[in-house]
Length: 155
Image (cartoon, rainbow, N blue to C red; front, side):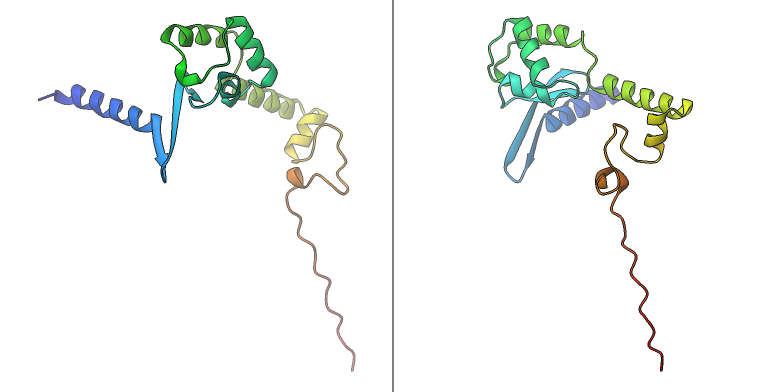
């Protein structure tokens, strides 16, 4: 009746709708899709919802809202025109997967030229001057304590 393309289109639409409203034990999680791969929760005010995007913090979210002259309303209350304007403003910044790829390339470059920070990344040690003799458990991992050999009793 629909053919192969119609079935695929219906299936992809249905899967998109399912992913937008995922429910875990009665808790609904609806998201507003801003750009490709960037979703913000729509039950939160826009200032806090924007912070769910990698690379946007409190200051950048406030700056974006002031650029748009937009009030801090819920993300679900955005009109289509406001979503398009938000997308235009977000396209000016390096955020999301682009930012993560940029950071990964920078770390790989440091490892390749074997600078101090690159060597610290390779060895999984802190790069920014923190002490390692007692702390840095996150980077060094949990260290196994060597069990002292039991002393053999001489008879």
